[in-house]
Image (cartoon, rainbow, N blue to C red):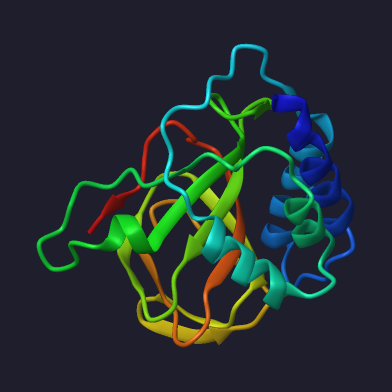
Length: 199
């Protein structure tokens, strides 16, 4: 039932407002995320389409996340997150659909809905490269579990749990995990309808 996802949205709204940020742009993105999570309501016509089972990988990431309140709310979910992978296959990485997954929590076709936003989770297996991609939406990420390399050419850096990353509209970016999985919350604003594409 869509209402079972509300505790995750409420935990998200409460937690992100406690986060410190270094710029006005990140602060604005946090404010939009918190507002979306607070105002989210169950989508009455939500139908869970066929989705991938990433429960084992998610459980590993949630164990590593420790006392994070969003991770705790995810661990208590009664219904599975609607994990999917929407990119076209790549000859150079044919197993990406099994190693990278996305689950939208709030959005036009998600269990919860709120105006003009998408909020969800990105999950990556260890030793995985999520190739360079972009999208018109402005994207805020909050790392919940797993230290990974985040790449926004020409910069790249290791980002630990608890850190925030802001991608501006159409900014190319990629991620690479090492020995641990990555679980991160994402929030899209602006053009939320045009999908991400590999570059």
